[in-house]
Length: 323
Image (spheres, rainbow, N blue to C red):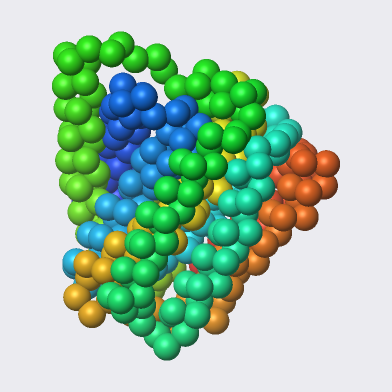
């Protein structure tokens, strides 16, 4: 078997484990949160958003510990670009998405601000541990704020999130079962992340492509599969707030939680390449900023706007592979 085929096989197996682990993590964490009487809206925008970002977290941490920091930064930046252009685009092609939740409308400006803060931190070529601690602190504050704001959310939106989450039985045996699912999911994430990082870095060397490019393309798309599945299923069920909220919430978690935790734990923080500073991170900010006029136009993402998003993402991929 050729080496490149072995590397691709590692990537595929790693992605399967990441997606499976993320699914188990979301199921277990969501059920435990509901057993603890946490509101469905909070679960939808925090537990589910974080759960679908778990593959990015596991992959970025694994890449940083392996000294492959370009994969770590490329994974997050590429995933955020894919979240808006690919995932939101595909979901709105299936069904035009109405944007009604006040939380989602406020999350987009927060996402733009988080991207600008990330660019400012990376400007000197390194995101330090102190800066990583700042990002992690920001996600904690954001989550607390979100919990408090959820008390004022409309009953319709809260019920929409409640209907999307599976019912759970409130007894001890079920709690133990959900905890086991959560632990197994975390284990699959760790194993899958290692396989994915090893396969992607070896493939990059074999093909003569930079690890940043591999992170922005193969790894970013692969780790975004949970978000893609969650948003597509929400669109098919007509649950627009979940489809859009998952994209925006996961992107915010990627910057604050994934990059923050990676920079905090990785020795020496995260080194950021010049190309990421000059092009990829600014593009991520621009893509987030584009959401504002799209959302404000009739409070919906139409099919033609989704088609434009998808075409833009394909164009971006072509540019990456030829730069």
